[in-house]
Amino acid sequence: MSETNKLAAASRRNFIKAAGAGTAAAAFGAVSLSARAASEITFDAEYDVVVCGGGGGGLPCALFSRWLGNRVAILEKAGSVGGTAAKAAFWYWVPNNEPMRRAGIADPKPDYMRYVARLSRPEQYDATLPKLGLSDWEYEMCEAIYDSASPAAELLASKGALPYRHEAAVPDYWAELPEDKAPRGRVLFPKDGLPSMSDGGRVAIRTMSAAARRDGIDIKTGYRVQKVLVDETGAVLGVESLTEEGTVFRARAKKAVIFATGGFTHDPELRKNFLHGAVYGGCAAPTNEGDFVRISSALDVQLRNMNYSWMAPISLDKAIAKDGSLSGIFTPTGDSMIYVNKYGKRVVNEKLAYNEVCATFSQWDGAKGEYPNLALISIWDQQAQDHCASDDYGSLIVPKGANDRHVLRGNTLAELAGAIRERLATHKSALGGLDLSDDFLRNLDATIKRFNGFAKAGIDQDHRRGERIVEKLFNGPVSKKADQKNETMYPLAAKGPYYAALIVAGNLDTKGGPKTNSHGQVLDTRGQPIKGLYGVGNCVASASARAYWAGGGTLGPIIAFAYRAAQSANGGQQ
Image (cartoon, rainbow, N blue to C red; front, side, top):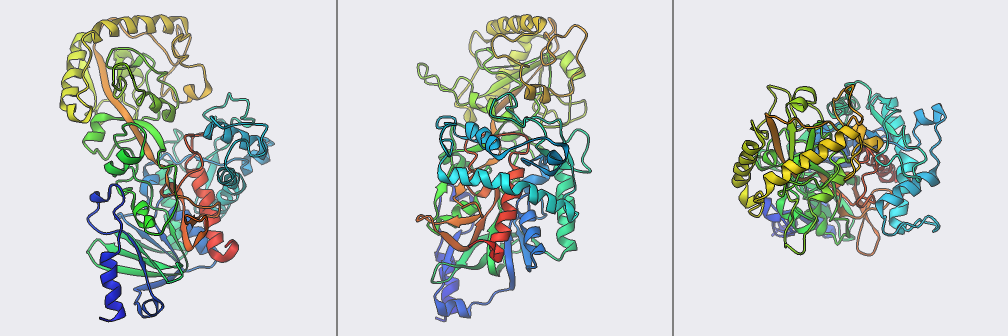
C-alpha cells in the first residue's frame, strides 16, 4: 500500500468519539503523518492561513490575517457565512475604546480588571492580591481583551469591514458595582443598524463578508472541517473537510489553522455531559455542534470551562420544535407580567439580565428531590399584550401576526391554568413529568395580588425588580403611565383575557473547549502551544467563567482574540 493510500486508511480509522459524537455521521480527529507521507500527500489547495468557520470570530480572523499579507481561506460548514453572529444583535463590548478616550471617559485597566475578576470568579476574588484571585491564565486572558479589543475594532472600522457607532448610554450589566468605574460607554454597534440595536448581526456579517470578498479571501461554504493533519513533530499542516457533495477537500496551511467553529449548543449529549442543569438548546447557529471539541481531543489538549455557557431563557415550545426563529429572551417585555413556577409562585426578578435569570432554573429542592423551577411560566394580561409587544430580542409578548406558537390563552386564570397543564403534558418526557401543583391556581391568585400591591407602591419587596439600571434597559417597549411608580411593574388586570408561555434554560452558545493562550494558540496538556493550531471564540475556553459582563461581552473579546491570533499566526508571537 502506498503512503498516500495509508493516509486515506488512517484518515478513516484515526478519529475520536468524544461525548456526544453519536450526533455526527462522520469521524472527527487528527491524522499524524510520517515525514514521507507528509511529503507525498496531495492538497487540493494551499494557503498561508486556513480559518475554519465564517461567523463572528472567523470573519475577523480571516480579515486580520489577510491584511497582514497572507493568502487566506475560510472553510464554512453551513451554506452561507454568518454563523451565530448573523442572528445576534452584535453589540460588542470594547473596554477603553477610542470614542471613550475622545470623550474623556476614563476606563483604567486596573479598574476594568477588578470588575471582570469580581464577576468571573466571585468565590476567589480578592482585590488585595496582585492578580485579584484569578489564575495566571485567567488574568492574562482578561488583560488581553483590554489591550486588544479597541485596536481590533478600530482596524475593522478603518478598513470598512465593520464601521461602528458608539452607544455611550448603554450600561454594563453590573453598573452599580463599586468595581465598575466605567459603567457606561464600552458598547459599540454596527453603524447602519436599527435604532433598537437588534439587527447588528445582519449588518456586521454583510459588511465583513463584503470586505473579505473585496480583499481576496477565498470563502468556501458547505465545507465541514473534520480533521487536522499534523506532521511527525506534531505541527499542524492543514485540514481535511467534507463538502456538501460528499467529497474530501484537503487544504494546506503554511502558517496556521484557526478554528472559529462555535460551541456545542446543538449537541444534546455534549450539553448533558458538560453543562450544569438542564439546558434545552439555544439560539446559536444549528451548525454549532462541538466539532472542535472532537477534533482537538485527538491532539491531547486541555479542556477548560466546559460547564459554562452564555445563558439565556428560551421558549420551551420553540426549543422542542427546533424552531429556526428561536432567540434567547434578552428582553422580558411586559410591565403587567410575572414569572411563576409550578407552584404558582414568583421565584426570580423577571427583569434580571438574561444570563442571571437562568440560575433559577437549576435550583434544586433537596427535600422534595426536584427542580421546582425547571420550567417557569410567564403570565401577562391584555394591557401588556396591547402595549408591550415586540419582535425584538426574543420577546415572548409578540405583535399580532407574529410567530406566537408558544403563547397560551385563557379568559380566566382557571382557563389559563388548564391550557398550561395541557401544554405541559405534551412536553412531559422533556420535563421529567413536570405538572402544575394542585394548589397552583390558589397560589397564583395570591402571587398576583401580592405583585399588584408591589406594583402600586413601586417597590418589589420580594425580588427588587426595577431597581438596577440594566433592568430598565431590558424592560422592552413600555411607556411609563401617569400612575406608574416603577416603570417595570404594573398591576395585572382583575379580569382576563390572560396569556402565558413556558420558558426554560437555554443559551446563546457554550463557552468551553480547548485551552488557548492569550495569542489564541491551542495548548497541549503540558501547557505548550500546538504549532500552527489556533482557536478563537466559543469553540475554545473563555476566561469569563460564569460571568456575562455586559451586552457584547461575547463579541468584543472574540474580536480581540481574532486580532491577536492573526498577529501570532503571522509570526508576531510564537
